[in-house]
Length: 318
Image (cartoon, rainbow, N blue to C red; front, side, top):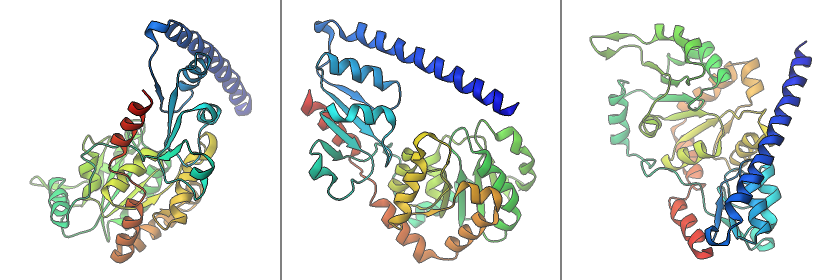
Protein backbone atom coordinates (compact mmCIF):
# COMPACT_ATOMS: atom_id res chain seq x y z
CA UNK A 1 0.00 0.00 0.00
CA UNK A 2 2.80 2.42 0.85
CA UNK A 3 4.48 1.76 -2.52
CA UNK A 4 1.14 2.28 -4.27
CA UNK A 5 0.64 5.66 -2.61
CA UNK A 6 4.20 6.66 -3.40
CA UNK A 7 3.78 5.80 -7.08
CA UNK A 8 0.52 7.75 -7.24
CA UNK A 9 2.18 10.74 -5.62
CA UNK A 10 5.10 10.46 -8.05
CA UNK A 11 2.86 10.28 -11.12
CA UNK A 12 0.67 13.13 -9.87
CA UNK A 13 3.72 15.22 -9.05
CA UNK A 14 5.18 14.69 -12.52
CA UNK A 15 1.91 15.66 -14.19
CA UNK A 16 1.62 18.81 -12.09
CA UNK A 17 5.28 19.62 -12.74
CA UNK A 18 4.87 19.19 -16.49
CA UNK A 19 1.77 21.38 -16.58
CA UNK A 20 3.60 23.97 -14.52
CA UNK A 21 6.51 23.86 -16.95
CA UNK A 22 4.16 24.43 -19.91
CA UNK A 23 2.52 27.28 -18.04
CA UNK A 24 5.96 28.77 -17.41
CA UNK A 25 6.86 28.52 -21.10
CA UNK A 26 3.66 30.32 -22.09
CA UNK A 27 4.09 33.01 -19.42
CA UNK A 28 7.74 33.61 -20.35
CA UNK A 29 6.89 33.78 -24.06
CA UNK A 30 4.11 36.30 -23.49
CA UNK A 31 6.36 38.41 -21.29
CA UNK A 32 9.36 38.42 -23.64
CA UNK A 33 7.80 38.27 -27.11
CA UNK A 34 7.49 42.06 -27.50
CA UNK A 35 10.84 43.66 -28.31
CA UNK A 36 9.98 46.93 -26.58
CA UNK A 37 9.53 45.23 -23.21
CA UNK A 38 12.46 42.81 -23.39
CA UNK A 39 15.14 43.20 -20.71
CA UNK A 40 18.77 43.73 -21.62
CA UNK A 41 19.80 40.78 -19.48
CA UNK A 42 18.08 38.17 -17.31
CA UNK A 43 19.41 36.88 -13.99
CA UNK A 44 18.45 33.28 -13.14
CA UNK A 45 19.05 31.97 -9.61
CA UNK A 46 18.40 28.29 -10.38
CA UNK A 47 15.51 25.94 -9.79
CA UNK A 48 12.82 24.63 -12.10
CA UNK A 49 11.00 27.98 -12.35
CA UNK A 50 14.03 29.42 -14.17
CA UNK A 51 14.10 26.81 -16.94
CA UNK A 52 11.14 28.14 -19.00
CA UNK A 53 12.47 31.71 -18.73
CA UNK A 54 15.95 30.64 -19.80
CA UNK A 55 14.67 28.65 -22.77
CA UNK A 56 12.52 31.52 -24.05
CA UNK A 57 15.38 33.97 -23.44
CA UNK A 58 17.57 31.72 -25.59
CA UNK A 59 14.87 31.68 -28.30
CA UNK A 60 14.81 35.50 -28.43
CA UNK A 61 18.60 35.79 -28.02
CA UNK A 62 18.33 37.65 -24.71
CA UNK A 63 21.54 37.18 -22.67
CA UNK A 64 21.13 35.55 -19.29
CA UNK A 65 23.34 35.01 -16.25
CA UNK A 66 23.03 32.05 -13.89
CA UNK A 67 23.95 31.80 -10.22
CA UNK A 68 24.53 28.28 -8.88
CA UNK A 69 24.84 28.07 -5.09
CA UNK A 70 25.66 24.40 -4.66
CA UNK A 71 28.77 22.38 -5.50
CA UNK A 72 26.71 20.35 -7.99
CA UNK A 73 24.46 22.24 -10.40
CA UNK A 74 20.77 21.35 -10.45
CA UNK A 75 19.08 20.01 -13.58
CA UNK A 76 17.65 23.38 -14.67
CA UNK A 77 21.03 25.08 -14.45
CA UNK A 78 22.79 22.22 -16.20
CA UNK A 79 20.39 22.58 -19.13
CA UNK A 80 20.94 26.34 -19.31
CA UNK A 81 24.65 26.72 -18.51
CA UNK A 82 26.04 26.07 -21.98
CA UNK A 83 24.38 29.17 -23.46
CA UNK A 84 24.70 31.43 -20.41
CA UNK A 85 26.80 34.58 -20.74
CA UNK A 86 28.14 34.00 -17.24
CA UNK A 87 27.71 31.21 -14.71
CA UNK A 88 28.39 32.48 -11.20
CA UNK A 89 29.17 29.89 -8.53
CA UNK A 90 28.61 30.12 -4.81
CA UNK A 91 31.57 27.92 -3.91
CA UNK A 92 35.16 28.06 -5.17
CA UNK A 93 35.71 26.43 -8.56
CA UNK A 94 37.77 23.25 -8.85
CA UNK A 95 41.24 23.84 -10.21
CA UNK A 96 41.30 24.13 -14.00
CA UNK A 97 37.53 24.49 -14.45
CA UNK A 98 37.59 28.21 -15.20
CA UNK A 99 40.34 27.71 -17.79
CA UNK A 100 38.06 25.27 -19.63
CA UNK A 101 35.00 27.48 -19.18
CA UNK A 102 35.96 31.20 -19.29
CA UNK A 103 32.34 32.20 -18.59
CA UNK A 104 32.47 30.48 -15.17
CA UNK A 105 33.25 32.71 -12.20
CA UNK A 106 33.29 32.33 -8.42
CA UNK A 107 31.25 35.10 -6.81
CA UNK A 108 30.20 33.49 -3.55
CA UNK A 109 26.67 33.59 -2.14
CA UNK A 110 25.19 36.92 -1.05
CA UNK A 111 24.21 36.98 2.62
CA UNK A 112 22.92 39.79 4.79
CA UNK A 113 25.48 42.30 6.08
CA UNK A 114 24.54 41.28 9.63
CA UNK A 115 26.34 37.96 9.10
CA UNK A 116 29.90 38.82 10.07
CA UNK A 117 32.45 37.55 12.60
CA UNK A 118 31.98 38.61 16.21
CA UNK A 119 34.69 39.21 18.80
CA UNK A 120 34.94 37.07 21.93
CA UNK A 121 33.56 39.99 23.94
CA UNK A 122 30.60 40.30 21.58
CA UNK A 123 30.05 36.54 21.66
CA UNK A 124 29.82 36.63 25.46
CA UNK A 125 27.39 39.53 25.23
CA UNK A 126 25.21 37.61 22.77
CA UNK A 127 25.17 34.56 25.05
CA UNK A 128 23.96 36.78 27.88
CA UNK A 129 21.31 38.32 25.61
CA UNK A 130 19.90 34.84 25.00
CA UNK A 131 20.13 34.08 28.76
CA UNK A 132 22.92 31.53 28.40
CA UNK A 133 25.89 31.35 30.76
CA UNK A 134 28.64 33.34 28.99
CA UNK A 135 31.30 31.18 30.63
CA UNK A 136 30.00 27.94 29.10
CA UNK A 137 30.34 26.86 25.46
CA UNK A 138 27.18 27.00 23.38
CA UNK A 139 26.00 24.59 20.70
CA UNK A 140 23.28 25.82 18.35
CA UNK A 141 21.35 23.11 16.49
CA UNK A 142 19.16 24.14 13.57
CA UNK A 143 17.39 22.48 10.68
CA UNK A 144 16.35 25.79 9.11
CA UNK A 145 13.06 27.66 9.29
CA UNK A 146 10.98 24.49 8.80
CA UNK A 147 13.25 22.37 10.97
CA UNK A 148 14.59 18.85 10.62
CA UNK A 149 12.76 15.94 12.21
CA UNK A 150 15.90 13.80 12.31
CA UNK A 151 18.06 16.52 13.88
CA UNK A 152 15.34 17.24 16.42
CA UNK A 153 14.96 13.58 17.39
CA UNK A 154 18.71 13.09 17.69
CA UNK A 155 18.86 16.17 19.94
CA UNK A 156 16.07 14.72 22.08
CA UNK A 157 18.13 11.54 22.60
CA UNK A 158 21.45 13.20 23.46
CA UNK A 159 20.28 16.39 25.20
CA UNK A 160 20.70 15.19 28.83
CA UNK A 161 24.31 14.26 28.11
CA UNK A 162 24.97 17.44 26.11
CA UNK A 163 23.86 19.61 29.02
CA UNK A 164 26.62 18.06 31.15
CA UNK A 165 29.27 19.96 29.21
CA UNK A 166 27.64 22.66 27.05
CA UNK A 167 24.68 24.97 26.70
CA UNK A 168 22.28 24.10 23.88
CA UNK A 169 20.03 26.23 21.70
CA UNK A 170 17.65 24.27 19.46
CA UNK A 171 15.74 25.84 16.57
CA UNK A 172 13.12 23.11 16.12
CA UNK A 173 11.44 24.70 13.08
CA UNK A 174 7.87 25.66 12.27
CA UNK A 175 7.03 22.24 10.84
CA UNK A 176 8.25 20.16 13.78
CA UNK A 177 8.09 22.41 16.84
CA UNK A 178 4.83 21.00 18.19
CA UNK A 179 6.35 17.52 18.26
CA UNK A 180 9.22 18.80 20.39
CA UNK A 181 7.41 20.79 23.09
CA UNK A 182 8.18 18.10 25.66
CA UNK A 183 11.78 19.35 25.62
CA UNK A 184 10.55 22.55 27.28
CA UNK A 185 10.88 20.60 30.53
CA UNK A 186 14.63 21.19 30.18
CA UNK A 187 14.16 24.95 29.83
CA UNK A 188 14.12 25.93 33.49
CA UNK A 189 13.81 29.56 34.55
CA UNK A 190 14.26 31.01 38.03
CA UNK A 191 13.29 34.67 38.49
CA UNK A 192 13.80 35.43 34.77
CA UNK A 193 17.17 33.68 34.85
CA UNK A 194 17.79 30.58 32.72
CA UNK A 195 19.02 27.88 35.10
CA UNK A 196 19.25 24.95 32.70
CA UNK A 197 21.31 26.41 29.82
CA UNK A 198 18.85 25.01 27.30
CA UNK A 199 16.49 27.01 25.09
CA UNK A 200 14.27 25.96 22.22
CA UNK A 201 12.61 28.10 19.57
CA UNK A 202 10.15 27.41 16.81
CA UNK A 203 12.16 29.87 14.74
CA UNK A 204 14.51 32.66 15.68
CA UNK A 205 14.29 35.93 13.76
CA UNK A 206 17.84 36.92 14.75
CA UNK A 207 19.71 33.87 13.53
CA UNK A 208 22.82 35.94 12.89
CA UNK A 209 22.98 36.76 16.61
CA UNK A 210 22.11 33.26 17.79
CA UNK A 211 24.71 31.68 15.50
CA UNK A 212 27.13 34.45 16.41
CA UNK A 213 26.80 33.41 20.06
CA UNK A 214 27.56 29.76 19.24
CA UNK A 215 30.86 27.96 19.68
CA UNK A 216 29.65 25.09 17.49
CA UNK A 217 26.76 25.04 15.02
CA UNK A 218 25.03 21.82 13.97
CA UNK A 219 23.11 22.28 10.76
CA UNK A 220 21.87 20.84 7.50
CA UNK A 221 24.11 21.58 4.51
CA UNK A 222 22.13 24.02 2.40
CA UNK A 223 24.37 26.38 0.45
CA UNK A 224 22.96 29.62 1.89
CA UNK A 225 23.20 28.37 5.48
CA UNK A 226 26.80 27.34 4.85
CA UNK A 227 27.52 30.79 3.42
CA UNK A 228 26.06 32.42 6.53
CA UNK A 229 28.15 30.25 8.86
CA UNK A 230 31.24 30.94 6.75
CA UNK A 231 30.57 34.69 6.95
CA UNK A 232 30.27 34.34 10.73
CA UNK A 233 33.47 32.26 10.79
CA UNK A 234 32.03 29.41 12.87
CA UNK A 235 33.06 25.81 13.50
CA UNK A 236 30.37 23.60 12.07
CA UNK A 237 29.00 20.08 12.08
CA UNK A 238 27.02 19.39 8.93
CA UNK A 239 24.32 16.72 8.73
CA UNK A 240 23.30 16.83 5.05
CA UNK A 241 19.79 15.81 4.04
CA UNK A 242 20.50 12.86 1.79
CA UNK A 243 17.20 12.55 -0.09
CA UNK A 244 17.17 15.85 -1.94
CA UNK A 245 17.30 15.69 -5.77
CA UNK A 246 20.86 15.47 -7.02
CA UNK A 247 22.20 15.01 -3.50
CA UNK A 248 23.45 18.59 -3.48
CA UNK A 249 23.61 18.88 0.32
CA UNK A 250 25.74 15.74 0.48
CA UNK A 251 28.08 17.16 -2.18
CA UNK A 252 28.26 20.51 -0.36
CA UNK A 253 29.20 18.74 2.88
CA UNK A 254 31.75 16.45 1.23
CA UNK A 255 33.44 19.45 -0.39
CA UNK A 256 33.88 21.15 2.98
CA UNK A 257 34.91 17.98 4.76
CA UNK A 258 37.63 17.42 2.16
CA UNK A 259 38.88 20.97 2.85
CA UNK A 260 38.85 20.30 6.64
CA UNK A 261 36.37 23.18 6.90
CA UNK A 262 33.57 21.22 8.58
CA UNK A 263 32.80 17.96 10.34
CA UNK A 264 30.23 15.81 8.54
CA UNK A 265 27.88 13.32 10.16
CA UNK A 266 25.75 11.26 7.79
CA UNK A 267 22.03 11.59 8.43
CA UNK A 268 21.52 7.80 8.34
CA UNK A 269 24.37 7.28 10.83
CA UNK A 270 22.91 9.90 13.17
CA UNK A 271 19.44 8.36 13.03
CA UNK A 272 20.81 4.87 13.71
CA UNK A 273 23.12 6.08 16.47
CA UNK A 274 22.53 9.62 17.85
CA UNK A 275 25.61 9.25 20.05
CA UNK A 276 27.64 9.68 16.85
CA UNK A 277 26.51 13.33 16.80
CA UNK A 278 27.08 13.60 20.55
CA UNK A 279 30.70 12.49 20.28
CA UNK A 280 31.47 14.86 17.39
CA UNK A 281 30.03 17.76 19.40
CA UNK A 282 31.98 16.71 22.51
CA UNK A 283 35.21 16.47 20.51
CA UNK A 284 34.83 19.98 19.07
CA UNK A 285 33.83 21.52 22.39
CA UNK A 286 36.98 20.07 23.96
CA UNK A 287 39.20 21.22 21.05
CA UNK A 288 39.23 25.04 20.79
CA UNK A 289 42.27 25.02 18.48
CA UNK A 290 40.53 22.62 16.09
CA UNK A 291 37.41 24.79 16.17
CA UNK A 292 39.43 27.87 15.27
CA UNK A 293 41.25 26.11 12.42
CA UNK A 294 37.96 24.79 10.98
CA UNK A 295 36.36 28.21 11.26
CA UNK A 296 39.29 29.79 9.40
CA UNK A 297 39.01 27.25 6.57
CA UNK A 298 35.25 27.66 6.35
CA UNK A 299 35.66 31.44 6.16
CA UNK A 300 37.84 30.94 3.08
CA UNK A 301 34.72 29.61 1.31
CA UNK A 302 32.93 32.93 1.79
CA UNK A 303 33.13 36.16 -0.19
CA UNK A 304 31.98 39.27 1.58
CA UNK A 305 31.59 41.06 -1.76
CA UNK A 306 29.34 38.40 -3.34
CA UNK A 307 26.35 40.69 -3.88
CA UNK A 308 28.55 43.47 -5.29
CA UNK A 309 30.31 41.08 -7.66
CA UNK A 310 27.03 39.64 -8.94
CA UNK A 311 25.66 43.14 -9.51
CA UNK A 312 28.79 44.10 -11.45
CA UNK A 313 28.50 41.03 -13.70
CA UNK A 314 24.83 41.75 -14.43
CA UNK A 315 25.51 45.42 -15.19
CA UNK A 316 28.46 44.52 -17.42
CA UNK A 317 26.23 42.31 -19.57
CA UNK A 318 23.40 44.88 -19.58
